[in-house]
Each structure stands twice: as structure tokens, then as C-alpha cells.
Length: 594
Image 1 (tube, helix red, strand yellow):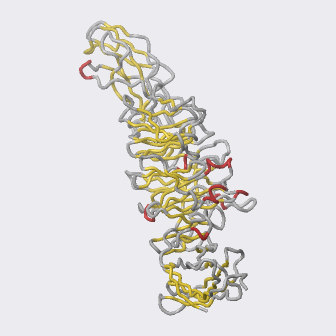
Image 2 (cartoon, rainbow, N blue to C red):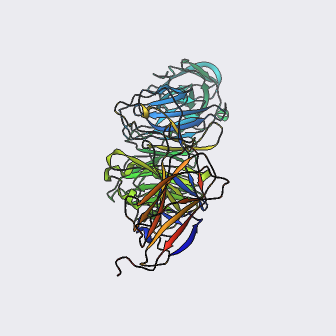
């Protein structure tokens, strides 16, 4: 009987579970769970840390981090099923909102020092800070001011008209003008007495009012007179000559669309929102101001709703379930809608991410990537069984995040029975791995932590009846356990025949190239792709120096034409497997021969 040694020091191809295990590359694995490729090695992933101890009282669906650029104060929010919570120590404080109960994640972004969010079912755009959450936008004042003769002054004899807007001096948000008051006609050398300046019914975000007036004997265009920096004063004496009037009042500062908004993103200093048919864009630098004409219809006759928005360099992606389009241009005068693909669509808004100029998304049947050219399917075989197991009604519930420091695109995907797994795609190496958790990971949010480092926050659906697991915020890739639970990592190799087609062979020794740690690992072998394993053994990793460690693992009593090796590891240390070696006993006899 001949014994030959084989060493496999490159496992950087990741998982490929589509073809037969005998038809994948030597550097690929038939199964790879909770290990991930790093160069040529395999590393057991880090854990998921629970950041809060006191539950929020309602399930958290969408973590979101926020940093005030003026004060430097950082905050971690948790959008819940009914509103917004902010992490405070190891608990939560309620920020606001009283919306219909829904597990649909929010779309949230920060612009300057204000947060904005929208969720399907809520409809309207919301704005939030550390302390409150209210509808975005400032409505025009409901009443008109009165202009009267104010006595001797510098204004020429003419007819004048005036309007008032509401204003937030902290965010520069401003309303449209109110209705036009009764015109005032004066003789020469007069000033104007403003009265009945409208007081907002609710202060909300209004800090000031602005007064605008026409030029003498003109109408339709109003120029800045003064700003009243309170919300109670109702009178003002105006002696501003035409040459000292300021900029014209804008009539494009309408409140955000009150349509059934579903998605939101920022691109080119504008807030973009979408319902099922149209996208709407705010005024430049004014995310709460929308003109009534600032909308783009997105192929309304093709029979599919808008499924997502994403800023992608100089393109703004508008996705449907049956196509991927994008807007180009610098402003509303030259915005143009173009098509990236009519063969592939986007199933989930929250699956779209861009890494190093490459857009990655879930299309309902596959994951795709594009650098501007026709989309390329990237999970054709490698994680096909998991992709095909996504329930048809939950394809919009694929939630992705980027962790650039590891070149990871992470996608939380639903499976049958209410379970979830996380698919890990290394977009630099084009390699996949599968991450299982003690309980399924829900929404994933890429963000910066309080120190400005790249990280991923997560929500975890409650996994026990009446449980409170879903009422916390978690941080991905942290620690060595999943919120106190062991990480069970497994791998199964390609089915090798070692270029001895039809000949019987068996494993005598399995060796590992890994550091010596005080942990145990289970080794196993499979013959001819059978399950369960033919032979297994639990051994210690606490051996000598970090060099090859030999372990007896014989399946001599049942040799086969194809051999697979496997590992199962549940220790706390994030071990690195740098190589796996086999001593294989080979015979010329073919099974079934006389």
C-alpha cells in the first residue's frame, strides 16, 4: 500500500457549494461556516457584542450612528418598530415618534448636523437630532401680514406688497412665503408699518420669521427686508430702500412630498426620496425644501415599483425589480435618466452598497456587481443554495453593510422558518463565506464608531417568545463570542481523488498548520461525499510551536475513490488555519474488483 503526503496551503477561494464537491477548485471549500478567507488562510470570525443591557421596551429594527460636527458629540440611535431611541449608557432614552408598528427598517442619513429618515408605512420624511424627531420641512405661514403707513421715512410713493416666511437659522431651512397681504399704496417719503406678522401655530423647528417686500409698483417677486429672530413679535417698522433689499424669496421651499415615501438617500447636496413611481429631489443644500416640479418619473409604464435608491459616484441609482437606472447631471436643468440594465433589477434597497467604485446588490435571483458595465452575477454557484432558499416574499429583506477594513460585503439574508444567515463576500478576493450566529442577525448598518473607526452595527430579532433580545443594539466583528454564545465554525473540503480516478484510498494522518492555543478542535473525514462523517476525532491544539501538528485520523476500514476532510471548532480563540495536510494511503484495487 502506497502512502503519499499532500499539503493544501491556499484556501483563499472561499465557499463554493454549487457544483459537486469533486468539481470545485483545490483552494475552494464545499462548505465554510464562520471561517473566512484571509489571503490563503482561513480565520475564525470574531463575535457580535451586545452594547446595551437595559432593553429599549420595543424591538430595534435599524441602528444608526450620528456625530455632531460642531460639538464632536457622537450618538448611537436605534430606530424601533414605532419610533426612535438613543443609546444612553447601557440603556436607551426615547427620542420621539409614535408610528404604526412595523418591522420594516428605516432609511436614515445625516446631513450636516441633522438626521433624516423615512420608512415605508410612515410616508413622510422625518428629521431628528439627539433630542427629538419631528416631520421634516417648514410649512408656509397660514396668514398674511398687514402693511400700513408707518409715518415719515425714505420710501418713494408707490404700491408695495409683503410676504412672510418661517425660518430655522440653525439649519437654514425656510418655508415658502405666506399668502400676499393687502397691497399698501403710499405717498412719498414714508416708511411701512408691518403688523399681524404670522405666529407659527407650533414652534417645531422654527426659530425666526423673514419679511420680504416687492420693489415699488412691482408684484410677483419679493426681496428680503428683515429677519425677526423670535416667533412671537408681530410688528416691524420697515424703512429699507430698494437698493438695500436682499435676495428674492424662494417659492421652491415647499415641504417634502406627502406621498407614500419608501426610500431616501443624499446625492449632490440634495435629499432624494421615492415613492413607488417617482423620485423627488430637494433644493440644493436644503434637504427639507422641495419644489412642486422637482420630480422625475421612473418608467411608470413598465409595471414595476421603485425598489431602491443609491448614490454611486457621479450617478444616482434608481432601482426597480426589473431594471437598474440612474440619474446623471449637475442640477435640475440637466438631470437625465439613463439605464444600466434592463435584464437585472434590485430586490432590496438595503442590499445596495458601493465599494471602491463597484456597486453590489441583491437582484432577487442572485447577487450582482457592476463597475459601470453590464451587471455580473457573483453568487452563481458559490452560495447558490442559500440564495435559492430565500423565501419569495422576503427578497426585499436582504440587508447589507460594508466593512472596508476587511473588504467585506455582509448580507443578512432570510431563510425558511424565520431563520437568517449572513453571507460574507470579500469583494477584493471574489470569495464567499457563510456566517451563522446563535440567533439570526437582522439589519446591518455600516457606520463609524465613537472614535471614527469603520464598524458595523446590527439588530437581532428576538428568538424566544416574549424575549427582549431584539430590544438591544449589537456591534459586529467584536469579541470572541456571539453575545455570550460560542461561535461554531466548520469547514468541509473539496472531494479529492488525488488524480487516481477510481482507485481506493483513505486518510491516515491529518495535519494542521496553525498556532498552538489551549483549545480543542474536531477533525473528520468523508468518503465519496457521504454524510454523516465516516470518522472523527477531537484533539488539542496546544501542541509545541505554531508549526504542522499531526493527528491520526484513519478511515482505513472504509476507503473510497473521493476523500474530504473537515474541521469543527467552537473555542473562544479566533484561530487561523494556514494549511491542512494529509497522509493518504492509496491502493491499486478498485472497489468491486475480484
